Length: 80
Image (cartoon, rainbow, N blue to C red; front, side, top):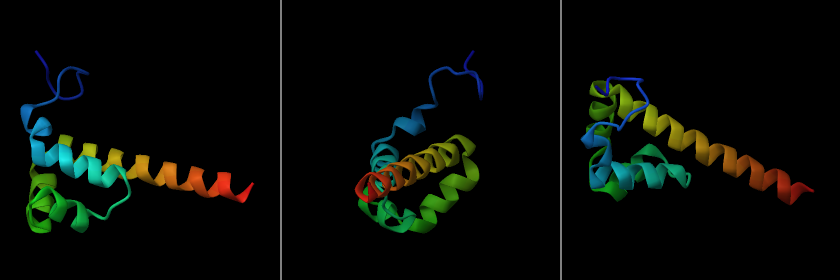
């Protein structure tokens, strides 16, 4: 069975269109507020989701980290 941390298929709510849109917006460097608006939800709804669903919080943090790493790489490349 696919429990937390098992490396198996994530829960269906992580594939919800709004969650996918939210992750994509965060991964391009948008703020949580802007990403929530883009996904069609209020930022308070986003924070409620994150509080209730640790896997969602992990996905959001990963998307934010990906964006930050890409932004730093872009700056370093431009500085060369």
